[in-house]
Length: 454
Image (cartoon, rainbow, N blue to C red; front, side, top):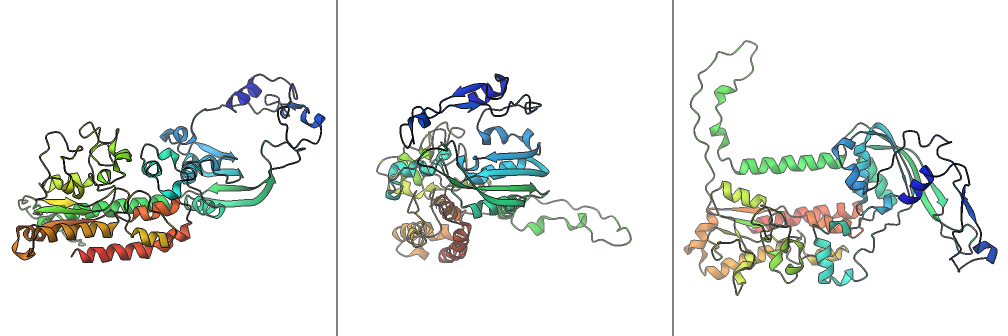
């Protein structure tokens, strides 16, 4: 396409200057020999004479890579997408970028179907949950193989969430690179619309910001005990009409840190420090290979990150070692993913039960809702069962053993969990309504599991 465009823009002088025979190699569905040999002249419009090349330029490259650059933000008055949206691995990302690069009041014109180009990226064996499918599905650096396939209704809803207002919409019957005289025709009922971008942030962006702020507030509160006692109220006098009398500041005490004997972590890839790669499908996981772990020790550690996770920083702030993955307990030989010089497995300061790719709901509940859990079966309930089994084996009389004392003085972290329930729903073609129906199930299940660990 780029070569043809360059040729027409730069090497044509008149309308119909060049002639091709596009169907000469097509032996099917021809009405006659003359139809197969029919010639077509181009261009039908001479770009330079029509003034189309004035201020015109072309940019070759991936749409997401080229237009995600910060200097593209708010740079365009209009965006036209013709038979383009369904070329996306993630159509939501396309819409987000279009919204970001348009100016407030900018226009988005679209024409095309939703024949998602990567809908068969996982092949026909995805239902069997082969290890190959699991590895591709969960891959961080193979994320380009994903395909999010939304209905037209959901595409419009996403566009509205990103600040677009619908000005005009209709369905247009059209073809694409077709022989108009062939005995067989492929026709699309393509979506055509004109939208304008309003000067507002997307609902999704706001939601992400709120979630970030909530999590940030949670972890700040976690690491600051008795905060009120640490605040010098003399620095914040109540507001009066008259100016308050200045008060001397009393010396500030050293911040008091929470004292914990250990950490017990439940969750998914946000917290997993090595369980998922020790499961049967683990060696196929991208987290067991480079580039994961390169910024930490130069090789994979089982973390789905090139460095440390939040649990590492929290443990460090509390003066504790990072809790070990639970599945290291049953290893007949030392864990090949142990950091160099790291001692043998010790669970004296807690355990990490989190598993990358896990869900809050059990796999059976997800299946009842038509959703597969393709990465692991180690849901939140399974992690809780691990926790109970582990300490029942350690202590016959829990209240009389050292383990119970560790439990009493430990921090229990349940989450982040539940995100994969929605991820798998969307990646498997579920609608926003389907995902919304999962919310009370996910929230109630997390609440119930937290109560069980109490």
